[in-house]
Amino acid sequence: MPDIVVASTGRRHGGRVRVIDGRTGQQLAGPLGAFTAFSGGQGVTLSLADASGDGVPDLVVGARVAGRTLQKVYSIQTGTLLAVLGGPSRRRHRRLR
Image (cartoon, rainbow, N blue to C red; front, side, top):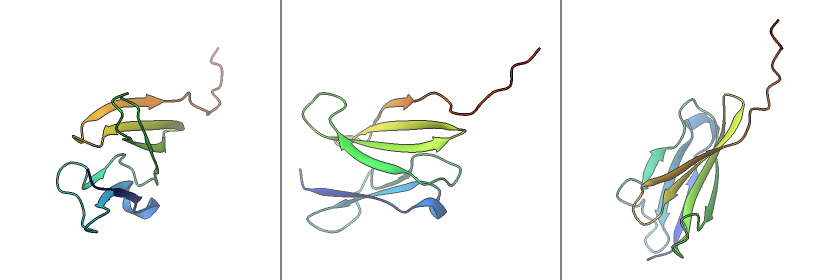
């Protein structure tokens, strides 16, 4: 598998992610070549981690959505969405009587 570079185009472009082949400099063909991980225009954070335990790094894309931090985990090999992980909301809620 060739080296790849993962890059987010930033906040103004709706959380779009592009994966570039490290050998050729071209965008990868298939589902991970270019996609929008989260809609709504927020920026995203990116990392690689072996979330599936198969010895191959997976792509982890995170964003703040409706006051929560969410992460989506994609298989680098197939482009399949493996998991959606989310933290608790940090918004304060008023107690209703």
